Image 1: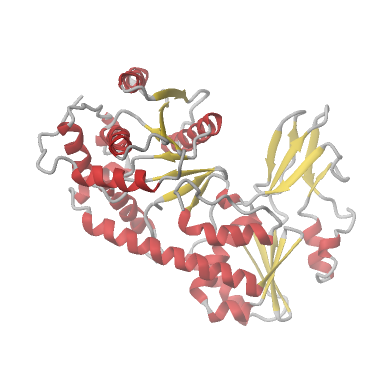
Image 2: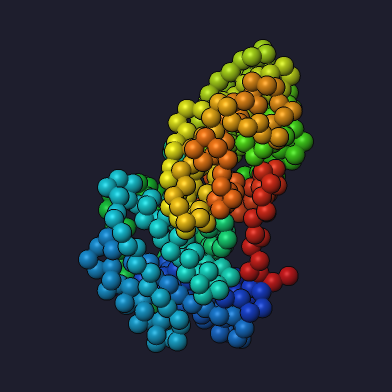
Length: 440
């Protein structure tokens, strides 16, 4: 364990952020704090508890959870250390182990997904209203600079102050404008030691290399991230309005829109097309800037022009542009009795029967779909053949089917909520839940 010797500020910035967060919580709010044992998360837990106590908010309940990824020999001991810390302060704590095989590649991304999935599941079990995570100003600066290095074209933003996990529980980042130094000052002033994870200084990881290159100069990037977040939120709202005014969704599978209206507002059009292509194609992310420019260029294309991108077919038909899932790569899966699987990144199949259900694309002779009746005959037929069915026939009554919006299945940043909800409405889905953990 280690502790910083810099205690000049006593961690006022960290404590003030915790007070601000706690003072706005709704009555009876249950906060689950994700705690690894490192300085940031331990500081968040300590600061929130102190803020709640000094504000006399006895209605607020604070719990903690530690995800043990099992990737280092010391991880179990570190989780036990957090449990002991919580026990001395009468804070409910749970260790959440990541079980099963670990991937050979993309380990850090898989670990992040597992961490948030475990936290979201635990939050649902204990009835937590929000998960508080300890991302800091340092993390925000690193995230923004990494994203700019990968794609310097706007809109590039850092982390949102809140993110919806797996469609049902919100995470909040109360320390996103607080430096790591201030958090450690607070811990030192309170005599609390923390655990240093050796991976945080391992240059094999992109974030560590970015941290070393920034050298502690994070304030400017943090301010830039705040402005970028506001810009992205406004762009999301404009794209949501454009969706309503110029796009029609047929059968939750095909989009029809006016390319001239898109051409009149290219920034919002690109933002909307990126999300819409991901939804129609069943992908987590939409295409890049160059491909989006090619799609927008179809506003000037003649009747019959076609292109594919993001597993989607784009086709100009007279004055309209159509987007639908291309037929290539449509898989067949088996859904075991009593299980649920995602088909093609677009549909959730719940098998409530006692037999295996095989799901694949509809055949060329499948029954017409009423929702596609108003489409040009060629596109109606193509759209029909991208729909899920059991074998060559209709889905059995015991197989529940529902549309999903793939970009938002795991993570929905708060600044994209407006667009996500308009997309949900267009595809016949319920809106995503609002972040209701703050009082009125």
